[in-house]
Length: 160
Image (cartoon, rainbow, N blue to C red; front, side):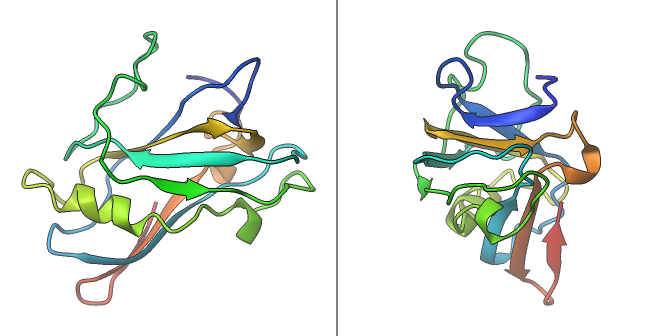
């Protein structure tokens, strides 16, 4: 909950990672063209990594709690996006290798929920095998993962 880095996903055992993005300013009528999460590497990390990305299936995702299985017990979207990131060969790098696969289908599923309102929060849940170590908000707010969404609705782009 308060780690200075994000272990995707092996840290003394495999774990589920949650990323909550607040104030997602995407209107319900939007059509998502492109979406991804941009990470910044915190450490060199290589080897094979196979990650599974899902979204919490709620129109306004509640904050995370330090309870056992809080993330793994949440209702997740039926859609899954896989991501096999290339090795991260240097620390403090934020480029194409630290960018997830396109998650536009996940974002579209959430903003299409009847209760979705512009400004709500959404959460992305990541599990899998392997290890990539990214910077976290608690480690460096300026290098924290951000959600990039390009959508059609008066040609606006949202980045959070």
